[in-house]
Image 1 (cartoon, rainbow, N blue to C red):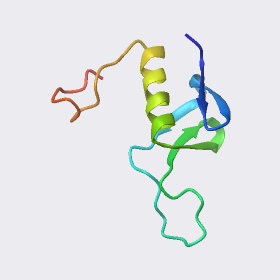
Image 2 (cartoon, one colour; image 1 turned 30 degrees about the horizontal axis):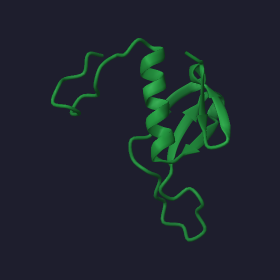
Image 3 (cartoon, one colour; image 1 turned 180 degrees about the vertical axis):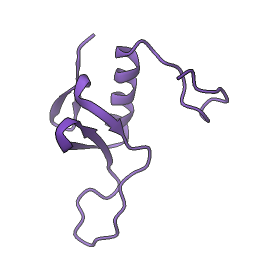
Image 4 (tube, rainbow, N blue to C red; image 1 turned 90 degrees about the vertical axis):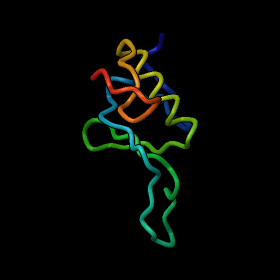
Length: 82
């Protein structure tokens, strides 16, 4: 398994990911170029922006890398194991 995951045109090291947004970005600004994208927050205040598929792939890669921690509470009818 690789420690890198492709998001858009970037290879992001899994160990740099702090969190992944659960909902798409919406700010209402007319000139916003990130509307509908998911933020993946990295160390040092950096972010990359992902579409649905890239966000899901990043989440799967992180769960595999960490040993599969189980479903998030509220998903699949089970409580979270973490």
